[in-house]
Length: 127
Image (cartoon, rainbow, N blue to C red; front, side, top):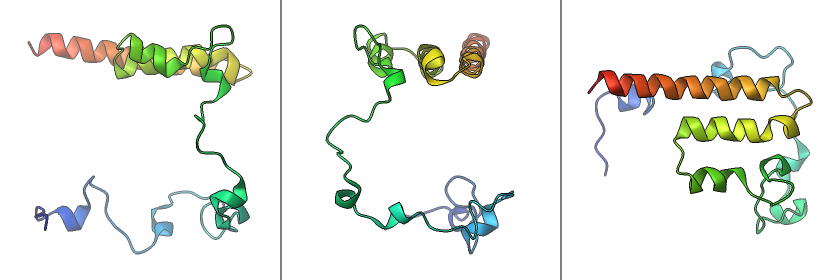
C-alpha cells in the first residue's frame, strides 16, 4: 500500500480540495451547461454504435501540411523543440487554417515565445 503524507487526503495530490459534488466546483454557470443540463444522448452509446474508427490517427487537417503532408507534431519532434517553442510553432502552423482570423493563434504563439525567453533568462541568472 502506498504511504501518503498527512496532507494527501485533505488537499488532494495537486492541492485541489475535494468536495461532495462536482457542482460545488463550478464557479460560474450562466447558461446551465454544466450543472442540471441534459445528458448528451451520444454519451450513452458504445463505440460501435457511434461508428468511431479508433484505428486511424485523429489529427485535424489544420495540423497537416497541404503539399507535403508534414504533421506539426512530427516537425517539432524532428527538430527537438522545447515545449514552449513547439507550442508556438503549432500555433503558427495552424493559424491561417483553423480560424477565420489568425490573430488569436499568433498572440498565443507570441505568449509561448515570451515564456521561453523568460525560462532562458532565468536559467542564465541561476548559473
